[in-house]
Image 1 (cartoon, rainbow, N blue to C red):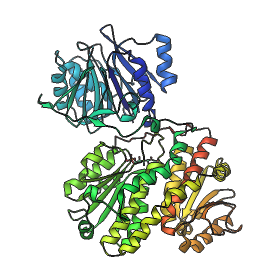
Image 2 (cartoon, helix red, strand yellow; image 1 turned 90 degrees about the vertical axis):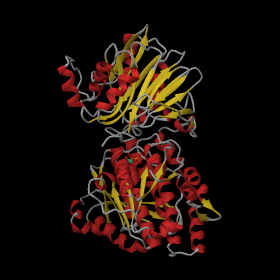
Image 3 (spheres, rainbow, N blue to C red; image 1 turned 120 degrees about the vertical axis):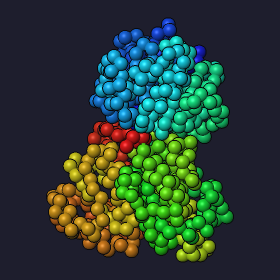
Image 4 (cartoon, protein in one colour; image 1 turned 45 degrees about the horizontal axis):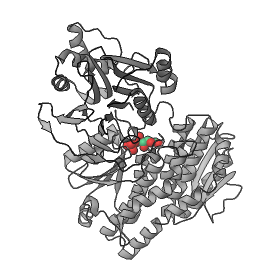
Length: 607
Ligand code: F6R
């Protein structure tokens, strides 16, 4: 989704703004622009396309912008196609803004302003805010901002500059995130910390309804009534090296390789004396014993981690778990009460539907527990209990290491629920924890030789469509494998419970169609193998992913990838690696932009 940056200080800001925007490219965008105070005037350059092909090219042609205060933006189009005119910053010579989010009542505001003589140029919702600020601006920026945000409805983060204040940046937000970075005689704004890690680790978190007035020496904050707000300085724990490729060709490949250490960092602080421990978030065994229902709500890959969680909790704790897609859950009037636990999973902590689901659960009075990767994100702040996944910054749009550690936390939760509900004893709980602790090594082993994944990818890369099949936990994992392939290779695929094929989908099988069979569940092996034979005898090209020690004969598979073995229950953590890498190499072989697949945004902050 859109990215915002801003700088005010003593240095020429063009390069800083562009460099920071590059760090936000991972969020997904289709145009970019900057506005800088040059000799007391607001000068704007913006262009459709990638930063280098559009904005930088235009700056080369038209001349760079010289000034020490400016704002910048990467736009992911929602209202109006990607075009120069619809790009941000948007404004006139008096007020210029960059905006992330959606203004829901922009038509009403636009009509009001047209009645006042304003002429609109773009198709964006943002222009109505820029012109509304201009309408209210009589010399006092915070007064204009307060009046404007009283009128607008929707989600927004705004970076604003006003002509009479050439050494200031103003910012306000509701729901969409924004931070204010703190440097030495320089200050910044950004949608997230990755944009600023090169310059500072210190920042303020802007909260909904707060207005920031930022000069090079610091920032002051007030609410919309002008009451001053004191804020604490936050310090990022992420390191700049984590947000760089570090010799890998793509962030996705680097992030896949970071999985062993991400699992270790995520689980080890939550294991106390060999037992899973949720004390840090206040979740007690008493609470776990008494919940009537457990819901797991998320989107995309995070929801797939929830599917693994459901299988585990139901298997170990014999407690039913409802997994739901956040965009469905929030509108289906779910059967939820204050006796339930709602587990919310989100890498970014900003996904609009997931956040809305969390708010709904909070309103009903359910206990909410969030697994979140970004400290200070909206979901992390709004959940009653939070456990951070320590994956570090995930830059590639396709989630890999974040998904992995969401799963890892799910294992600890499943063990604890089972223990609290007396379905396993302490000895068994400790044993399960110790198996979980071997996972970083097992995942590491999968990364020793990447050739089989590259070969498997070469077998399916020219297909129009394929199937992923599996049973039980293998089915939960197939969903993730299929999503990963679709999103970065653009090859259509579906995941299917292997036993369900005969009820319709098997008619899709034709000569040469690739089928990826995940066969890591020894208890279900013979069943899945019969399904593999069925599709293979109808012409499918079957790629099997199986654990060491399992023999898949040549009647059942054309190509086999063997991964380290563990107990069935733990296999998803290992088996996801080949699926991620098959998707990765398929994307590479197709010449796609692996880290920034078309049409996608990393952090989906709008509905
Ligand atoms: C897929 C992917 C998405 C996200 C989903 C939720 O690779 O990354 O499906 O998992 O958009 O995002 P978060 O976890 O940020 O809420």
